Length: 568
Image (cartoon, rainbow, N blue to C red; front, top):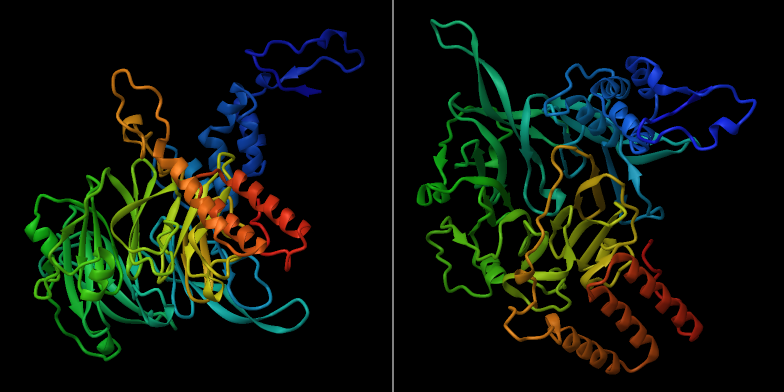
């Protein structure tokens, strides 16, 4: 008989009184290598749970030897453990949690499906759906080409299946991009930023690693164009902006500088050789002290986030400028690359850029939205445009944020570590599952979210979610100081507690007025459901109120049960 015994726990009470069971043996009497070998055969979920039972098993289950065996079992073809403080544990968890999930908006079956998982992939870092297929980049620079194909079902029927087969498109990739528009029908080419070994110059031996941009046809994976840069220039990110005939490639260097070059996509498939000019972008020429950390772009604008959390904007068309800022006063059509600084109260960590609206997330986990709000895509509870960043007060600490043509999505995590997907804006075409009429505030969508979902993307036909957990790159938000909480007045000597923090009473009065203006009971119920989505409540509280309102609506004998409540 083998018994777990922890020195800090002492002997089991009443152990001497148990008869006929023999003498218990402590696990600590076994060699540590044997215990680690036994533990390594457990599933990853059980290893994590076992490590939370006591201090002894925490040390055993956290040993790199255990995770090395688990990693080799999960990915037999992985030869290197990667980098980091805990390389084997990181590699094992990356490969255990990797997955690409999607849900089609049309058709009879509207359930979450999982794509084929490339055995050679070392975790999933980024993905991008194109017109016909999906591309995935892993953590060692391998870019995979996931194909849609006709396959035979279990009943012998031929059906079209999404992302069911894969090939390796290229290796040594750093980043990739395609047409920045939300509609995947425009994504004809895939631009891959990669590192390639180039032969040395005449009279020298050896080769040099040079960065290059390779262009592939998304339909077949055939390479049609390649441009190579000098070995002294090292890039880490690529984004596209502009029309097909004047496609600008923006390249971010390791030093935080932006370079750009222009190509004509309509001539890429013609077999010829020509030279393109690489020039320093105006944001790096006019503001040389800035060190850009990341970029985001759409067809007519580009957003830069610096290493200090500042945000700078380029807007290239007057229509988008008016939607984003509400005026054309500072727009200069002759100098469209002039960067505009956004006024923000804190350091920005990441962003999402749609066609004519954007979202920003700061270091305190607050979400700020700006731009066109015709369909309620800013989630502010109304349909008024915002010419400056406006906080969405009832959402905090998102995992991912995505802005599309006229709707927005937020991936959030509850206190029990469960994930949920919230959306706002236009619901046409099923893009907001469960809310076909859309919503002017963020509401919980009727979709099951994977436990380790970390990023998302929505197209006209499908919603994609990438699952991957990196133990060394978890977003950590700071606690907001009490003096900076929205609606909290500055304390003054002799002043008591604030009577109405944040204007909650005024907001409730406005809600009651809106409910009172509804002509029928059914309209009042629907308005109340909408108001529940606006209020800064926890997800469980919103689910409770939505379910209770549905019960009351059915009991009142209204016209139909209404939309089903979101899954709890």
